Length: 223
Image (cartoon, rainbow, N blue to C red):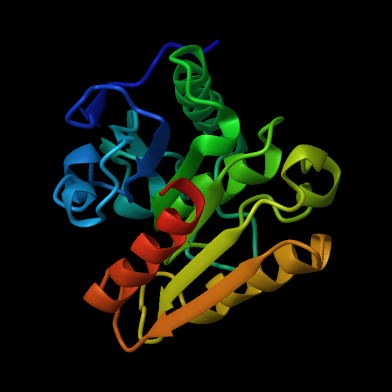
């Protein structure tokens, strides 16, 4: 198991969580980025885990060291853009957090993984590969990593795990077509998977209407 990432934890008042949500931040942010959100979702028996990604140089930002789930090598969305070794390392770190929740007594089917931007890409990457059924995966303003390996590496246990995709129609960082392509490719892997897509007139952000859908989705699976 990988060393555990540093995390923010928001525990239920009774400190007896019956469900867990692992929420992954975007490039250059950290776990504090979404810290205000869990209290708004109305899930009193749920533990929220907001990890901080490792710090690493990011090529597209001139090699500047920042918190990132993986290095982005290029802005060409049609070529190889990301460091696979970074993705694999972050995958192991996120899987270690899921396993810790399992060890704390929360079953895998009561654990959801959420992510924004880079974090959304990692949430989708891990959610497709985790070896036990998850409660759900939420992909916010993100895209599919390692598209050529998904069909081989996907987990049969999560073939029907529900997924929610949300994206801004005016996103200049991750174009909406890229998010929709991820949705469509994942849907094609198993048409029986419950899949939802919502888009909003916004840029690379999260809006109140989107948060309402996130709350609805999580309540249906963890409430």
